[in-house]
Each structure stands twice: as C-alpha cells, then as structure tokens.
Length: 108
Image (cartoon, rainbow, N blue to C red):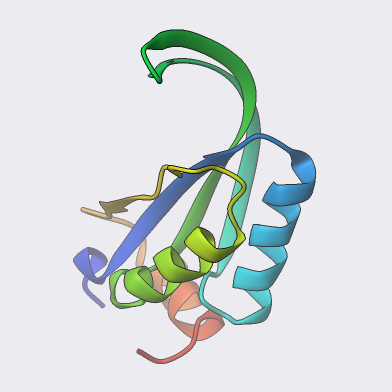
C-alpha cells in the first residue's frame, strides 16, 4: 500500500451546521474515512479588505483518486463564494491506517 495514494483534504467553513453537512454527506457517500474538525481564528484578504473570522477547519482523510468527487461535493454544499479545498498528499503513514482508509472509502 503506497502512502502517496492517500491524502488529507482541508476546507474551512463559517458554521458548525455547514461543517456538519459537509462531514455527514462525505462520510455517508464513503468518499472519506475520517474528518477532524477544529475551531480556528482566520485573518485574510477579501474584496480589498482585511477580514477576521472564526471558522471551522475540516481535515479529511481519503484516497487521492477521490479528490475530484470530494471537491465537487464540497463546492455544491459550501456556504462560501470561494471555498478553500486543498489536497495534501500523504508522504508516509502506517500501513494499518492506510488499509483502514482503503476499507472505509469507495473504490476509485
């Protein structure tokens, strides 16, 4: 099992409700094996101004081959006009964890 076939996808959203909707749909469709969520403080440029807000950061564990499907789902569900959807390949991980991700997600 090659670690490089797996990834972590991150997105941020402005509400627990939107985070829960994204989480539940992706888990139900078996596009992801796991989600970790954290409340964070963000500062960013938006429409020519510096903005600050509290957001929820989602870290989703999955296969790289599912990225486009996950991206499409997030874009349809997301509350933001320009959502963050970033895929970070996994360079290394324990084999049992990768096997678990493999078993908990759809074949792609």
